[in-house]
Each structure stands twice: as C-alpha cells, then as structure tokens.
Length: 110
Length: 117
Image (cartoon, rainbow over all chains, first blue to last red; front, top):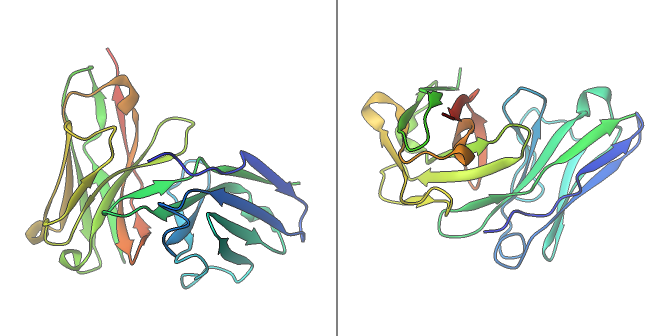
C-alpha cells in the first residue's frame, strides 16, 4: 500500500489549536474506522494517542481528539503545550492483517 | 510493568542475515497479536509484519516479503524477525509493537539494524 498523506509540518503557539490531516483511500482510511495516531519525540518510541478514529487511551489528555470524514482523518490538539512538540503519525488498518502509516508531521510549538 | 524489549540488531553486510528478538513481559503474551514496524534514519514509520496470537495468520509488507520471516514462541513470551538477503534500504530502527484492537498500544525501544559493507 502507499503511505497515507500528511502535511510535513504544522505549527502553533501555546494555547492555540492545530489540526493534522491524514488522507488515504477507500481501501484504508475510508474503508475502516480503524485510524490511530502516534506521537514520537526524538529518539523515543512512538506512543499511541488515538485509536479507532476518535478514542483516547487511558492517560492521554483530552486536548487530543480525532475525527474522520470519507478518506481523510484528522488529529486536533487544543490548548497547545510545549511538550506537544513532536512528530505525529497516522495509521490505518488496510485489510488482510495489514496497516499503513502516514509520512509523519512535525509539530512545532512556537 | 508491561514491556517489550528488542535485541539482535547490529551491523551486517548486504546479502547477510540477522535475527531480531522481542521479549515481552507484564502481560499475557499468548493472547495478543504482534507486529514489527521499522523507521529508517530521519524517515517515517513503515509497517513491516504481523503475526496472530497462534501464528495462524501472518502478513508481510511487499518490501520484505520473501526475505523476512516473523515468528513467535508463546512459551518463551518472545517475538522474532528473521531477516535474510538484507539490503541497504533495510537499514532502520526496528520496533516490535503489541496490537490493541486495530492499533499498536505498546512499543519497544527499538533495535538498530545497519546494512553496509
């Protein structure tokens, strides 16, 4: 499968909101409600932030929210904080026990 | 504590082989499906392989199919990735990750594989 499409970078000031998009196809994002989002700080392993499009694992702040419309999923981070600065990856189930990641988005907190 | 710890990475020549291991602890390993994900230096995440809890279902990305073999030993709480015919483009940090529904909720710290002469 081809990687999902994400913007290479986004930025925002502390307290603001930012949204990261993730565009796929009807074979992945559009075909399943199984989009997940991961936060990765430099040199660290990815951390699950959102699963099943909009659900948050225990311990993830409610400032993080997810949604999906057709073939595009979105991650919104409200009330930006300095520690939110990281790389963010979307991921979608693509059928037959396969998953596909997005190219990643670098979030800069100004 | 729920934990995954990878090992087995290193420097290998093109065409060579390497076997990665992932030791699981703090959860019932045999109940979970598992995955390998890799990340080339300075690049994004790439999904590599999946194995069901009983090893009855396995998936490989096109980029590694025919060269890599995923396996697990539930008695030893361990996941493996046998990598043969390695290429320069296989150079990456390799992560093992546990499935939670259709997401990956627990990740190891990763092990670096460098393919170079």
